[in-house]
Amino acid sequence: MAKYYDLVGSVYDKNAKVNKYKDEEIIKIPGVTFKSLEDIDKFTAGLTGSLELKNKIDKKYQDKTTFSIRVTKDNENFYYNSIIYNNPNLIQIASSLKSKTSYITGSPRTIKMYFGNNDLFVNAWNDVKSKILNSRTKVEDKEWLYGVFGENSRYTTLINRYINGDVFDNETESLLTDLKNAFREYEIFRKYLTNKDKKKIISNVNVSSSNIPIKTSLGVIEEKLGSNDINYTTLDDEEDVYDPDEYLFLSPFELEQMTGGPGNIFHGQNPKYSTGTGRKH
Image 1 (cartoon, one colour):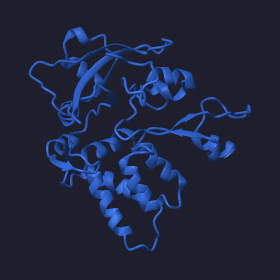
Image 2 (cartoon, rainbow, N blue to C red; image 1 turned 45 degrees about the vertical axis):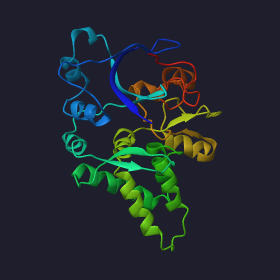
Image 3 (cartoon, rainbow, N blue to C red; image 1 turned 60 degrees about the vertical axis):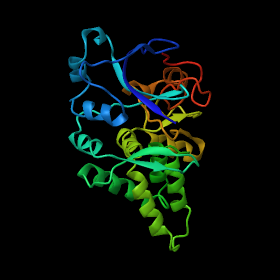
């Protein structure tokens, strides 16, 4: 399934009751063409931030307060990815990708792979590997992995095979190698970069004690309620969370209206992704 990538800007209105993202437009930059996710990354990773991006774009876009990457599938469903700024190492990685045809789902799927050893990639894999190795005994590391890669993603399926395997199984080391190779897929590696520092989004928590403040840490809530009483929102296979910092302290209703579903950027048309609200073309 083909995908099309657009750099888009919109106006974020935190006081809006229904659609907080308004006036979305595709950002056109003279002399710059975006044909892929890595094309956009190579451009934005060379900028210090959104302020420099606004200096690069036409005056007609200056009212935009929020920028993201809209990914449209050829069935016209779409979702959003976060923009990555100020990352020279990512430019080197994005410039070195190789196309590979995968038949995991039974039909051909072209993916972009990175086969080098840039420090950014090596450090990222070491971080993920450490979490995977610890995830058999540390629930927080397993939850972190689910939060970064999505609980139902292809990559997490491979992680679960490792977590649930026999410690003495001869396939354990082979699975770890498979995980590293799969991590070389650009979209999976990129998901780590955009989601590794995201805090968990908590929903459906019934707090009966007045001793827990509204703005509190996850650890405090887990300690008081028990982690089994908390529902964590995770990502689907292709999406990452792109929201202003304010989302951490919005009510569940506000969060859903802002993102088209708990923990998600609005996804268009497909009922799996959409709640009927959010950003539209």
